[in-house]
Image 1 (cartoon, rainbow, N blue to C red):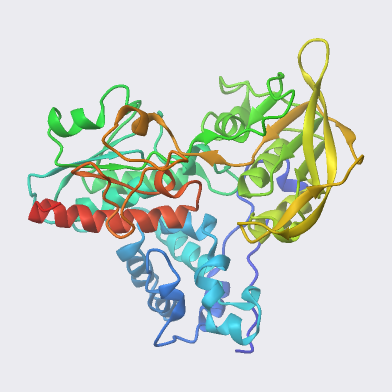
Image 2 (spheres, rainbow, N blue to C red):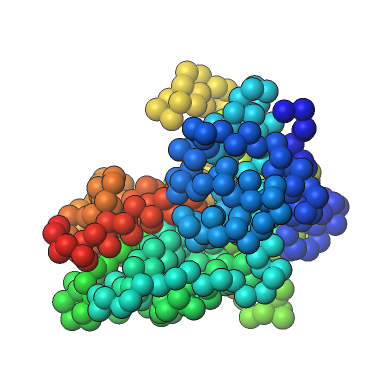
Length: 468
């Protein structure tokens, strides 16, 4: 209990803004063992209950203490097919680490056992050994499952359904797998080689991945079931529809949705243009609107693309920011300028139709709204202008509408999210399950994976019993 949390080495902020290499550099074996010793090995481990995929957290950490890293990674993979991903981008401080007894005894979640960093250590150890152990697959059942989307929910379903011996095909709309893991999260937070490795491990299990397959256009859900011979379908198409502020000037040149900006930079590697074919606008002054992880990713990406001034404009205070504390701190260290309690009201353009400024209004916080955060209220006559060359809108995403729009048998709510049973993830259409952001709205990787595990269990049961 006297051992403090072990800090993970990081790239210096002055250096990392000039590259896209990963910022946290991982635990050494000594740091990992020291951190693992901090775990009390609670019999009624609250951290396990707080994990959406219910990892045996004391078990994998005890294996690290014992130096049995193979057992550690195998324990992780029993319930989490993407430990290298989750160890990097999962908000552990809001889930497993928040319930950690060590952190509670010290009255600080920052003092909790660093479960995520230990998960990354075990996963990175396996990568250093070369080939990963392929999970066992049961005898073939003759049943076929189609998975629409290769994001974290789809990949999780693929692994758990394939283990039971069913044939699994993933239909991915883009030319690379991973969904938000590959197009949304920057290289400096999640190297794409890690995502590709995890998908390759699924392929070694016998999962087939088909690219450039836009379901809802090439095949409908009905055609997958009735003509292509699939016995069940899982829809995990995510929340890829960007939201905008609906303010004057949003149609000016130089205004990006965070989706487009990050997709160009990540999936299409615009950061290395002209070595790659994808251009991206580079600017001296950039404004990013929003306060979540996507806003931080956009702001930090702009710095790496050479911007001198990156302003993050957020209508609430730092306390209300939904972004992870670590991401906010990294952005601040790197030089992102926070304009808090300010809100854009109008974008200004030049004679050629390019954005040249953003008019903002100052805000103050009132009573809490439905989100539990204090409501921002404009301060009269407090408008001012920031000179910018590019604006990036990162205020959230709505669900991908393509499958719901082309499948009237699937019920949706008023936001366009597919309605699915909370436990089984069954939709209103027989044989069709859905999970992740298409059901939750924009959420986290680990919550999508939790949906994937529940859906896989229900799919396996459905294929065995035939009962809907």
